[in-house]
Image (cartoon, rainbow over all chains, first blue to last red; front, side):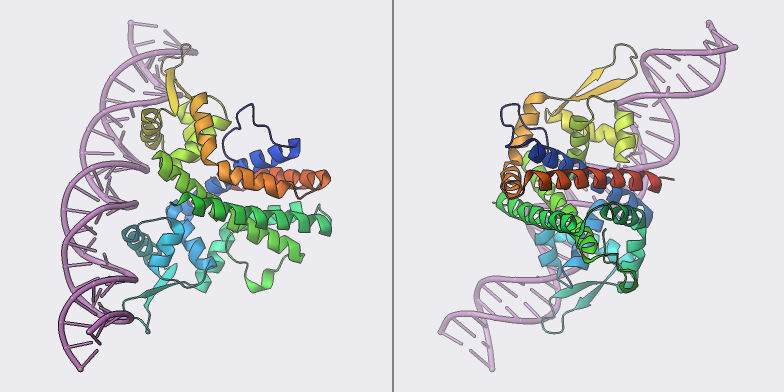
Length: 159
Length: 159
DNA sequence: ACGATATCATATGAGTTTCAAAGCACCAGA
DNA sequence: TCTGGTGCTTTGAAACTCATATGATATCGT
């Protein structure tokens, strides 16, 4: 997917290669978009990634988040400090296990964050409007499967 | 695209929302995959992004790269130091303008980098194999357009 | 129930990174 | 040749990452 395939190993079809190239460009571009959003809200790229994970995978504790993000637990303390200082998340003590901490994104701020992606969102709405419902289903399906593949590839790499 | 839409603003169709959600997941997942690759080759996430840009947009000078990556020129010096030390890129003086520097990725290393994405690549080949050629074209087209939208949204954010 | 061990988050400290500003080398126009 | 502008790097201060140590709590074995 990332970085050009050596000459010998062309994939089965032209479109498959095109898809992988586009996916690579898309990744970089979304990273840059995120970087700009991060600049707006005064957060590091990695902070935004963590916030995304929290917002997505519900309330979770720092250790689980660190594992998910591939970061050292101590590093996460600093990241959570910034996120908490900025009012993006709360750190609550788990009543069941008082060692544990539960990180939770604040809903209002979620909406605020969403606003920063407004341009991209409306652009995507416009793009999607050009496709037939069946085509949209194909695209959605592909993206889901690509994500799963990415997760698998990432896990396989941790050894 | 990133972060959940407020309840009121559901998009036109179910699939469009699903696509935006998946795109968000995909972004995070690819960032994590990159993070792991970065760990393997002892490069920071941002280094890998820059290397990707160099590998993609041909030989270019640090200033142009800094603009593309949304980074401070001084920051790029450090990044290029690491990339050069690791033998990923070369810094050549431009003979026409001896202030200028041309950054160029070394082809051998390109192939080596490609190997780290092997798992993801074969997974994607497998996924693509399940689609008809016409469907693959639809997907490739969508990804291209989404990338363009991302680029536009990023540029609009720099003001 | 009690002590030993494990787990969770954070503090500490060393090494690294980022970025603004200054500096150096070079180019181009007057 | 002077002057201003451009391109990259160095400098120094602040911030960041992460291995290890620490303190608080939980769980296991007996």
